[in-house]
Length: 206
Image 1 (cartoon, rainbow, N blue to C red):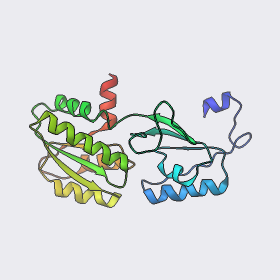
Image 2: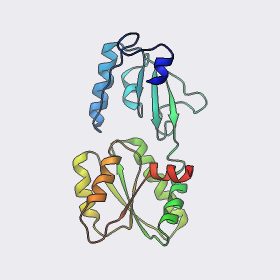
Image 3: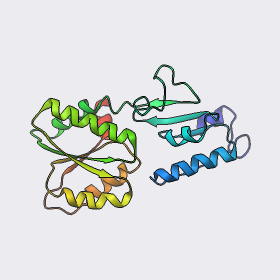
Image 4: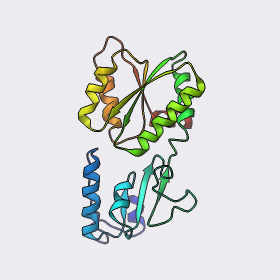
């Protein structure tokens, strides 16, 4: 907002900003995108961008972050996104193997890893597949897949996990923060260590 002010864009005076929150629900994202189209906004700023792209091919769309816009078909190429959409990619799918290596450094001798992926989010599924492929290449790792699609799926998935893993890997998705919260407060004789994409990004920056 500070940069907007510096450029002369002052909310409520020279620009109107419509804020919406999808609450981690995919269907809500589609509803919000459709609403913005009805409001005839000048530009849509979002995370991910899939719902907005499905809603309009005319209004410019900027995604603040996307896990794998190329792999999910959101853009034509990184150099030339094409259409009415552009934004920032963090290429999580391509980096799944590196994150697995970092995880092994954090927990030496780790053998059992669980991956909790949001199967309602294509990017999350793609990263799961990349993670499984990397684990197979490295060898000596047992990967347990935990499938979720909504908030209510998190606790049952954690309960089903029990002591089957030494670490929980969480691909980026709207439910990631809630997953980490539940895993940290989950009552178990032996807690597995939660490990998110954003944690690995911080370690890489250090």
